Image (tube, rainbow, N blue to C red):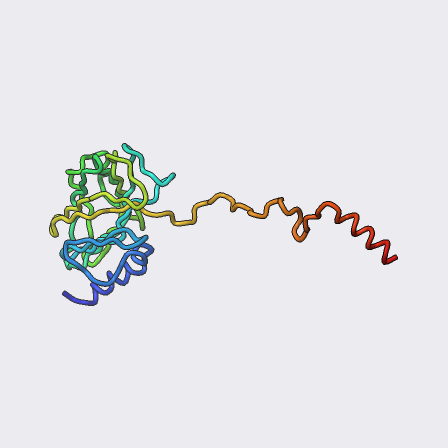
Length: 212
């Protein structure tokens, strides 16, 4: 295929907030590899899945039965594009998709329904970011927290399917910590003060009288 459109697509992906943290050197067809702090990535035919992650939840844990937003980007380097038809996994019950560009919303449907999310030729489909459709994994089977992942299967009309372990993200800012313990505390009194032993005050008075 023409290298110019491919280079243009990858250039855009690299310059996006997702791409800046997700893309790495090397590609392995139909396999996935986890990047630190950057979600997971996978390649399938002309499709490149990048920065797939579940955002860090409040309190650090997704409770069993809760929903989790799926974030990421899918880029096509083909001349015909493709369509994401389903997102499935044993760790959740179903998928909800709200696509601002779609005529009909696929909401509260089973994971087997055709999602109909288009990846344009030499273009990018953003999931839950960049103005793309919002995708939620509904009714998580178990509690899951930072550092853990769930297997998610993406099925495309042309490229087929690929299963990747999508991780729970880490905090994007430092979490507050407790105050540091002051080992000096008030034991030594004011800074620079020395403990005065019994009799020291009397000796200091005698010394002052002698000097006088």
